[in-house]
Image 1: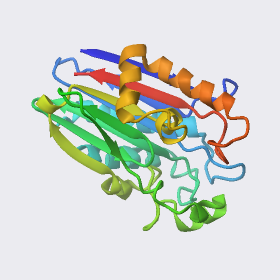
Image 2 (image 1 turned 60 degrees about the horizontal axis):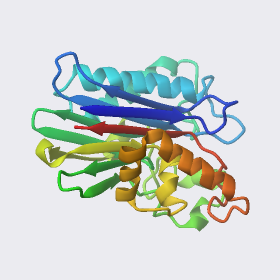
Image 3 (image 1 turned 45 degrees about the vertical axis):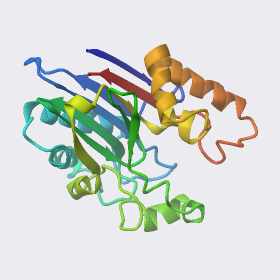
Image 4 (image 1 turned 135 degrees about the vertical axis):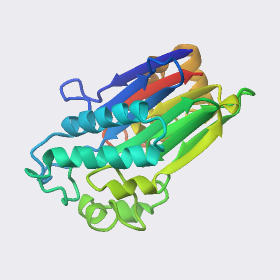
Length: 261
């Protein structure tokens, strides 16, 4: 088995808000990938005393423990428990009902026995390659399907779309959002490799249109996860007219996890 993990902050002067892990249980049977992309809040109050990295570290830690220690627990249930456990750590000190309370996108994949389970919540991505080389992206595209006019201001997004019906969902303080995730199970015999990416890395496909998902996986396998992130950085620096980036930040935290089963 081959695994590789790269996580690079968008700004070296700021903490990386992503979380990533590849877990190989002591039993030697199976494994798990956990990837979170912390949602950077706009300047102003979030109702919370804690930072986004504080949140992603604790949510990621809870998911790490639950997905390994409870192999019988479905991934959506594990996410619900992890969200509840994390919320309990700061419910007494913070306003968890605030729309900008710390939150994250989630990608989980777990392989054991003859099955591979997956979960995707919000705009990170999971790529699955079959033995014949076909690459299938598993995406939660609710945010991408919203009209650009609906995303005009942060206030509009928070009031009408964030963690609301007709909008999109992230892992924040409400365990029930786990039921909104894209989930499924694949025969392990149909999975050769997995790539989990935060949207700072999916920019190569989704923002700059340098290739498709299969091309993206090929870059990671042939050149390494770090090479994909560096390709994104080169494109970001070259987009001085913001033709592709538009209102997006120039550099985002970028995480790539590769697992060859």
